[in-house]
Amino acid sequence: MPTVLKAGPYRLFFYASDQDEPRHVHIERDDCVTKFWLEPVRMQRNVGFRGAELRRIEQLVDDHQVALVRAWNEYFQD
Image 1 (cartoon, rainbow, N blue to C red):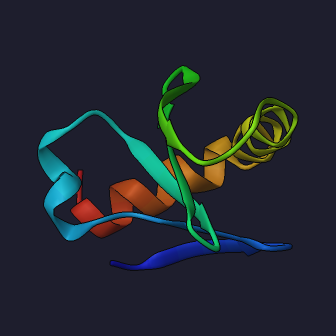
Image 2: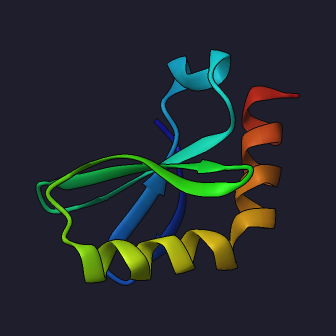
């Protein structure tokens, strides 16, 4: 599972088995994990993060959307 971005306490990554799903990224910190679709940016699921932090994570994903989509395409060779 390649890490595609580290930002503060967050690690953004893909699972190798994710290729059959729409483009998305997993974000983890400690025991919390969330998944965001990339096109458009929106949360798909969440375990442990609270609202204010999820909004910061959504902004992080939105700010890096182009680079995350590029990393997805390169990793999965779309």
